Amino acid sequence: MVNGVRKEVYGFTTYDRECGQLFAVEGLIAALIMITAAYLAFGAVIPQSNADMHVSELQLKQMGDDMLYIMDLPDGNAGAGYLESVIYNASPNRGSSANAAAREGFNATFTNYLRKSTGATINQDTLRYSAAIYCVDDSGEVVKLPFVNYGENFGRNPAVCCARYVAADDWGLVGQSSSDTAVRLEVLIWRE
Amino acid sequence: MKKLNDNAEWILLMGLIVSFAIIFLAILLNLSVQTGQTASESVAEFPKSQIRDLRAELTDAAITSENAAEFDAKLDAIRRLALYRDNAVADAYVTYDSFADEKYGYTKLRVHYSNGVTEYDEIILLPKKL
Image (cartoon, rainbow over all chains, first blue to last red; front, side, top):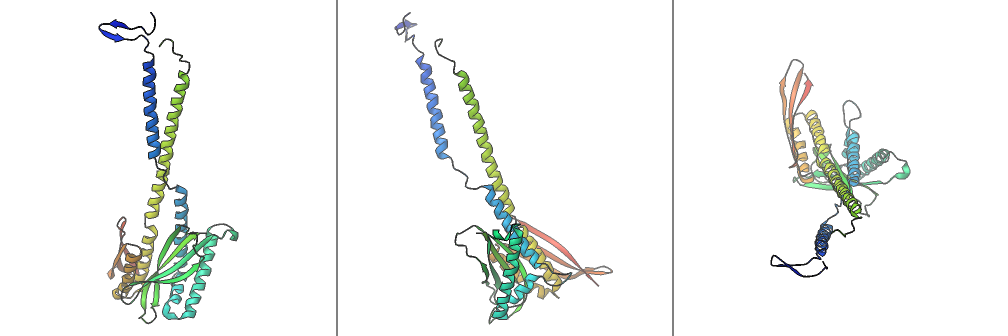
């Protein structure tokens, strides 16, 4: 039998050379696969988060919270921790010299802890912070008082916020009444 | 069909197997990224240090204060600061000399913290020698 010769079988017209049908089906399937692949590829998004960054932020936050915690611990069986004396002197009605001493003392202690906690040499002093005190004024509003800045965050590096409530004895804003109250010390820490 | 050259069937089959392996690995990679993120986010969002801090500060205030009014002055500041700066509701209720046994008098301190996701309540008994 010669290929390509028309013949009549049960009233239908058929061809002998039908090997091409298989290639047509294969081409169709390949096209479907390629379209599906392109659809998936263009529709895919890359998750913009690597776990490493969260880990380092977590570490930084834990470190900052711990540092504020150990600074607030009483030195002995009773009495006030170091942070309470810092806050006591940082009260605006205590006068500018006491405030400056409080800033200096806090800065010295906190930077010391920062450098120790990285476990590295002093050459790798890459941690910076910015501290502020939040307190409640006579009208019941929350007021922010800038406290200490160590470095500027020009690079907009991601910072974590660590905070601690500190008991503040005889605390008051300038021109307002003073009382035994509590303030909130917030520290933003970032890597330079 | 008889004339088709089917020597490459094995190559096709191996290609299929390799592609399945790659898809499987891609799924694993995707899952691991998301798992790491969810885990560290849930750790970062849990207010562990806030609760510990609040608890420590209120306990301290209850011990150092002589009466409920003195305690409430400190509590009011903490409550406002928590609301404005921590987006959390902090509250406490203290009962001085709630009850006593032979040697100690007990002050009962109830602490409440809620930031909408995590809620924490505790009753602390502070003994004081009579």
